[in-house]
Image (cartoon, rainbow, N blue to C red; front, side):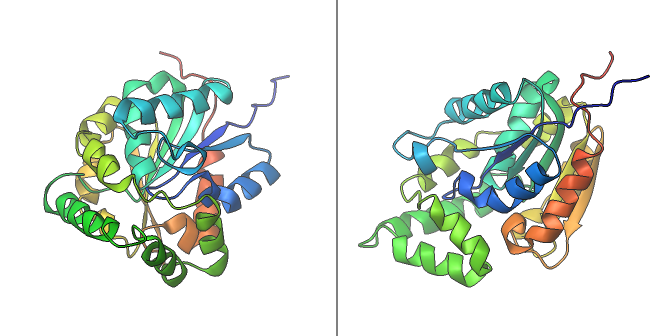
Length: 245
């Protein structure tokens, strides 16, 4: 008799200015379904807020999380975390059983990124470095439970410029092409980061687009039930065992 397949461990990587606490809803549901799960803090965020954000440090944080979960995971990243999940999968395909890249289907260069950086610099010059505005926007854009989870990890007020600058050096299309495993590009229907969705899908060897209806950029927080249903469906299709060569 064949031994039942163990559930794939799930590693969750957060967006910019948030932290691991943004994944509380998904962590609870995934654990209840029997999946080992870990949400990490990237440098400059959450419990690592004092650390500088760099590309090597962000990828090392993901690698530590993968090791903590046994060395091979379903890797899930949203927004900033999505870009670094994609980069990690491209560099370490043997450690990624499947990839969910959410809210990151836009090339992180050009007017979109530079405009975002200019806005972030202006906000950072405010007397409270933008804390009031950050909290107000979180409450305005998200349901109360999602807003509470985002703010629970603190506001990473000083990471925007360095984080965006570092992310502009990534090459997500090449990283997607380098990863041979299954990829799900999960985007809110109202997400402005769907700008290059077709190019991202075309770069994947084995990819599909999943749209979260009614969701904006932070789909896991705006529509947590729908987003988590997608994650559970994806996790059920992924095995932690390496594929035969």
